[in-house]
Amino acid sequence: HPGTRAAPNMNSWDGNFFDLNDDDDSSFAQIEDDAVVQIEISDINDKLRNVEEQISQLLGQQEELLRRRADLTARLEATRANQRAPPGNDSVCAHTCTDVVGKDYGASVSFSWSEKVEDVKKKVFNINKFRPFQIETINA
Image (cartoon, rainbow, N blue to C red; front, side, top):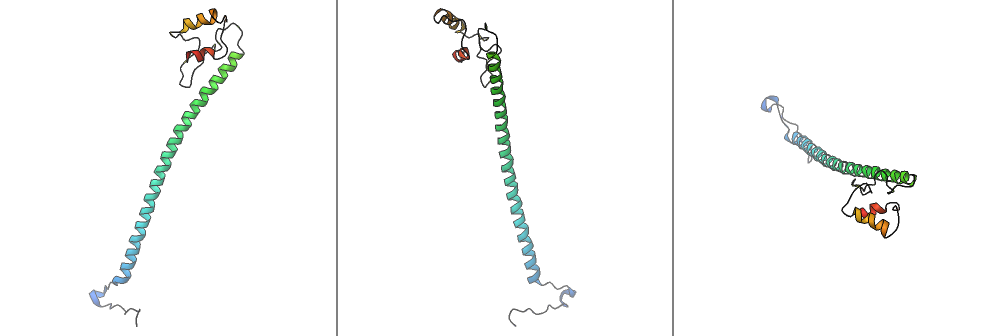
């Protein structure tokens, strides 16, 4: 009958008859399954590497943001402290006023133009002290 197989002859090859059709089909199916699994594992490994790179980038951004927040918080606290400082300070920033990279622009730092600024402040504008962040703005 078409579509039916004859029974294998069990006497051939000393009783070890191999039905190539059945074994080949299952072997090929197993190889194909293994290949699919290996491809999926490779894809997962690629995705995991991408996630690790993204995490690394996000951790770098987090570090920068934490540093920036700390700098801004320190500036805000220094400003509030200086607003409560007693009169008579020549600079609003009695402690230090710094930019985001940590450079001090306050009156405690001497620049090549510092003497001229003090001279103009007193002689031209007839004032004894600058307003908040004026000297830092001039020096920046």
